[in-house]
Each structure stands twice: as structure tokens, then as C-alpha cells.
Image 1: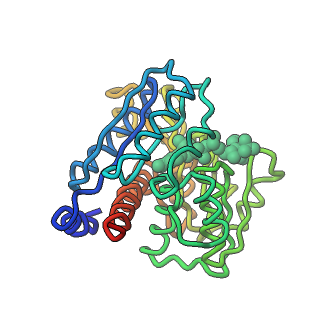
Image 2: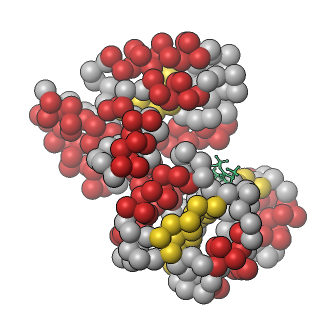
Amino acid sequence: MSELKPRVAALAARFRPPGLAVVLAGNNPASEIYVRNKVKACQDLGIRSETLTPPDSVSTGELLGMVAQLNARPEVDGILVQLPLPRHVETRRVVAAVAPDKDVDGLHPCNIGKLVAGLAGMRACTPAGILELLKRHAIPIAGKRAVVVGRSDIVGKPVAFLLLHEHATVTICHSKTRDLAAVCREADILVAAIGRAAMITGEYLTPGVTVIDVGMNRIHDRGEVARIFRDSPRKLALFDKQGSVLVGDVDPFDVAERAAAYSPVPGGVGPLTIAMLMANTVAAAERRAGAC
Ligand code: NAP
């Protein structure tokens, strides 16, 4: 993220600091933590941030109004609508209301279309972070078999297209995939974006595979922590202190035995997602500065 600092400083000197607006609706504790980390990253870099916190009862219409106001403000370069929105809100309508050039989460249909077509556009942060991770560790992608478990709009589908554009042969799996373990064993690169704690065990992993664990699962059961972490005193002490432990979608011990490269949880993709959000915001501000 430090690579962004000179770009932020240059913008601040000749234009103004980049600006990010976050809409955090309701009281989802996990979302509150994610937003806090994003705001902190903005502070660290010198990006101006503001957080709008409508209550859980906010309507789709009210959120559309908020987004329209942010779209109209020239000093707002990026708009992030933190998901999930409250259950009664029409999420797709709100996401599609964000101006595509301010859509720093890369979720607007316009940006998804550009991704599919391989055109320049705002890319979803977690998938962009995964590609950055692979490239910076010089993991070959072209011609490799990539298996993505999970087909969400925010992780699974976009990362599959990014890998495809890098010339991987890509298989996308989901809850209806038959013999998932056998499909996963074909992978040179395995991306797990499922949301099931330590589901990807040794039988899914072929020796030498590169594994990117995206899952963020909070475990509140001590017995589960003991099982997944093989009675690790360190993890059990952490559980006793915090009352929960964060676990990815991949069994941390099995993957350590079989994978050639492994991006763990916590670490890896989580911080990179925030870094890519910052990068998208800075790039949006640079485009705006160039246009002025
Ligand atoms: P999601 O929208 O719930 O999608 C989960 C995907 O996993 C779905 O496509 C689902 O299949 C598939 N799936 C569920 N159970 C399965 C099973 N038993 N076998 C095979 N596939 C299965 O989740 P998401 O938003 O993509 O997030 C996935 C995980 O990544 C979560 O733990 C989330 O917290 C984490 N995440 C982390 C970051 C980060 O910054 N590190 C960012 C985003 C998400 P169907 O489509 O058939 O239901």
C-alpha cells in the first residue's frame, strides 16, 4: 500500500486528496470491522474518507437518494456500499445506482461487463488482490488449470474471469458441483471462496498446488477450534481470550503439507482487498484530476 503514498501526495499537491465515501447501513458487526479497517487505511494514506451510517430500517429509496447525492459530488472519487445491506433492501438496484466511474468495488453491471470483455474498468477488490498476489509471487498462470470454488458476483465469478484473461484454463465450482474433491485435485491454482470453515481438506489438494484461501469464517465453538487446529495451544489461547477464532475455507494443516504456495487466513487476501480498494480510489481520483 505504501506504493500509493507518492500518488496520493501528488494528487493532494496539484489537485486535492482522493475522496472515498462509504455507506454502512445497519449494525452488522463484521461489516463495522471491515469499514473501520478501510477508513483506517484511508487515514494512513492521506485519502479523505466519510462514512454514512443509515439505520437498519433504511429503505431502498433512501439509499438510492444517498448514492445519487454522492454521485453528484465532485470531491467524492469512490463510493463503496458495504454489503450485505439489510435484508429488505434491493441490493442490486443500489449497487447499480453507483456511478460506474466511482464504483471502487467493481460491482456495477457496467464494470462487470468490462471485466468479462477484458476492457479497462474498475475491478472488484478481492479478485484484483488475488491476481496481484499471484503475479507478485511469480506464480505462473498462463496454461495452468485454475479451479475456483464459489460463484459469487463479488469473488468467484470475477476472479475466474481475471484468471481466464491471464490464460488459465478455469473451472468454476459451486454447491451443485459433483465430486468437488476430484475437480479440485486437477487444480494447479485453487481459489477457495466458499464461506465454509476448513472445508477444503487434504483430499481436495494435489501436491504442489497453489492455494488462495479467501474464506473468512468466525468459529465460536472451542471444540471446532481444537479439531481444525489440531489442539494448537496458541489458537486455543486466542479462542479463550477472544471467544472466537477466524478460519479460512482451507484446512490449514493439510494445505501446509501439500501446497507449494499458500495464502492463509488471516493474512493474504484480506489486507490485499483493502489495498486494492485504496488503489481503485486513487486511480479514480487521478482520472478525475486528469479530466479537470
Ligand atoms: P457467497 O456469496 O456466500 O458464495 C459462496 C459460494 O460458495 C457460492 O457460490 C456457493 O455455491 C459456494 N458453496 C457453498 N457451499 C459449498 C459447498 N459445500 N461446496 C461447493 N461450493 C459451495 O460468499 P462470497 O461473498 O463469495 O464469500 C466467500 C467467502 O469469502 C466468505 O467466507 C467471505 O467472508 C469471504 N470473503 C473474504 C473477502 C476478503 O476480503 N478476504 C472478501 C469477500 C469475501 P452456490 O452458488 O451453489 O450457492
